[in-house]
Each structure stands twice: as C-alpha cells, then as structure tokens.
Length: 196
Image (cartoon, rainbow, N blue to C red; front, side, top):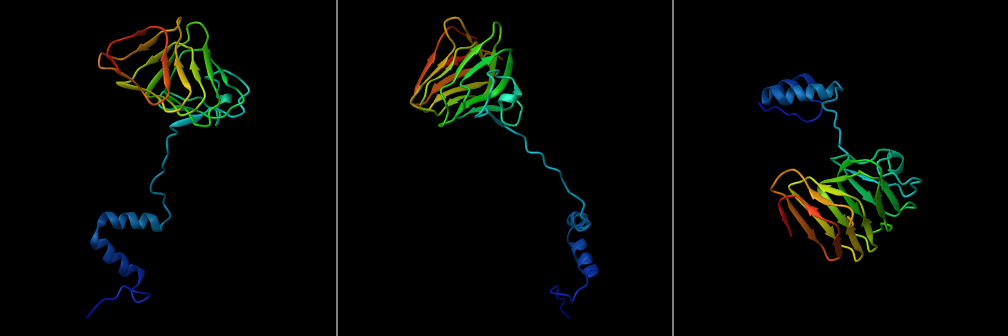
C-alpha cells in the first residue's frame, strides 16, 4: 500500500505528522511559519553614507549635509559624488571608516578648524574621479593596513606643510599608496610601520 502526498488526498494533519518525523526542527519552523510568526527581524547595517548633491553647508560632521541626515561613523565610508558644495570644513575631530570619491565627484577641498583631526579607518581613501581632490587637514589612520588609492586622473592631495599625517594603533601598520593617478602626501608622516 502506497501513500500519496499529492493534492487533497492526505490531510494537513497527516502531512504534519510525516513532516514532524522527518525533522523536529523543520517541523517547529513550519508551524511558526504557518501561524504567521515572524522568524527573524533582519537589520542591514548602512556601510556607506553619501554627501548630499545639494548640501547647503560645509560642515563635514553636520548630518544635514549627508543623504539620510546622518554623517558617517567609524564603521561607515563617506562617499562623494557631484555636489553643489565642494568646500568642506572639518570643525571637530572624529573617525570615519573611509572616504571615497566617485567617478562623478566634483572637485572637493577639505580644510579644518584649529585642532581638528579626521581619523580614517580600514576602508582608507579611494579616488575614482578625474578631478583634483584636496584634503588639506590633519589626518590619522588607525587600521592595520591603510590604502590610499587614486584610480582617476586627477591629483589626490593629503595634508599640507602645516598638517601632519599620522598612523595610529600599533607598530604593524602598513600605509600603501596605489592607483594610476597622482597622490601627494604633504607634511610630516609620523608613526610606526611601513610606507609603500
């Protein structure tokens, strides 16, 4: 005697009995699903935050200048595309996961208030634009390997004669400058590790 699971020949109760014998965990999952119980709430972290194309201010850490109303944090990369506000001022010290200038990026010029330092995390700095990007501010890098990549044709300038570039967080840091575009490191580079 065979048992067919097709169509209405087997009641829901019989299907549940068969399924329960196959796997108690699958059965429990199936019951919760059948009852409409949500199994899991998923929160997807935001890892990139984009400078607003219509930013009306210049404050790097002002949420109103970023899409979504929040400036990037230590785990997020700040993305820059075409914008009406290309002059950016870092008024206080803070950390971002990284910075990236998209191929559509306007020419940006960063300056800072006295004593302000922008710390860059493991995402480093990447420039894909064909315009010059200038970060004339004190920069610190706090990741084991920091990449500065310029894939565009413009010049990426970091620091200036009065602003130091510093590597933080230990003796095993590697500071790598790569890409086809020109990258200019200005000022002093302090810290331990290697520069390639």
